[in-house]
Amino acid sequence: MLVLNNVEAIYSDVILAVKGISMKVPAGQCVTLLGGNGAGKSTTLKSISNLIRTEDGRVTAGSIELNGKRIDGADAADIVRGGLVHIMEGRRVLRHLTVEQNLIVGGHLEPSGPALRRRLESVYERIGRLAALRGRTAGYLSGGEQQMLVIGRAIMSDPKLVMIDEPSLGLAPLIIEEVFALLESLKRGGMTLLIVEQNTRVALDIADYGYVMENGRIVLEGAAADLKANEDVREFYLGLNLEGERKSYREVKHYRRRKRWLG
Image: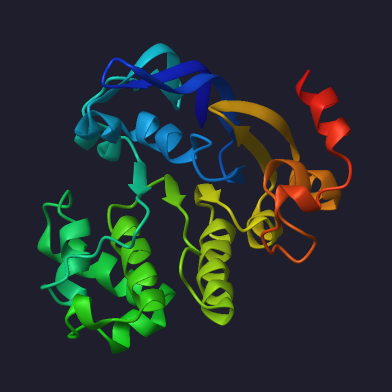
């Protein structure tokens, strides 16, 4: 469904943030993009959705295809119409609007009132908590509720592929499990997912395939089960221990092996 081929992205014509990456997201699957802060994960998503333009950035090389059609450089609204929605990091709800008003904004491409109402009800069926909160002002929701709201708002446009950046960021462990259970239910319903995440455990639990980024490049890829079983993925590339907790690189015992991989 989504194919990146040797993509490079730059900010302010100076900072090369993504350096020739290639990756695929097959239809109906969940792919996760892993890596530490500054690895280039968020820039990759912004390059795909072309929201990088709002930050004085652009794709300077390579190609990005959605369902066989090139979208690198396309208008962001046209990319949404093509079936791809990008949920950015930070739970960007419209804080002064209600939950239902936020959802209606997400369905703005639907010209029919009855069809819009059907989509609303479909979202409420999928995310029961939002139905109970439909009249609540979004700015007063908890972090987990806001995360569910931006997911609900995204699926109001009836996308085929949803990209979501750091869905677990700043959330308590029980809420993280609830959010990822929602994402897994969307996957079971046939939706294609591309998830950027630093919490390797929860990301690899839901994913079919994973890519690891470091310094703007893809340095490792493989089936999620294989990556999950690879302790070095957590330690060398993400600084995480087996429980998904961040470690100091000074605690990593096999540093020479990392040099060999990167060499």
